[in-house]
Amino acid sequence: MAGVARVGDTVMSIDGAGYQCKFPMETACGNTVSNTKVYAGGLLVVVDGDPVAPHNKAGCSPDTSTLTTFSGKVRACGKGVGRIGDQYTGGTPNTITQSSSKVFSGG
Image (cartoon, rainbow, N blue to C red; front, side):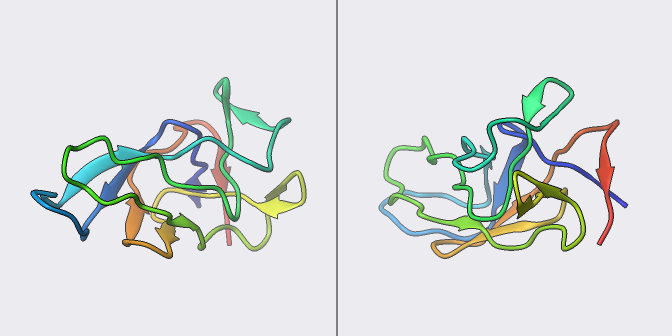
């Protein structure tokens, strides 16, 4: 079972676009747009469709990636929860590298 990801947990971006936009680069799980009720360790859990946090490095193009891999069994507000190792895709690929150390989700 993998740890459940929360808003603010770290995300590694392995590819990108933009003038002087160096990769790999660390960013974070962005604010959730669907989950307003489920927390893990005091932070909102990220769910299917939530955006990656804006990359704050100068020269990087905006990344519009959303969470596209998530638990097929555990849900928060009706959507699959993000876990360590899940990905934000749609712009550049971004992998969740940090999660709750106390709340876990399978499948």
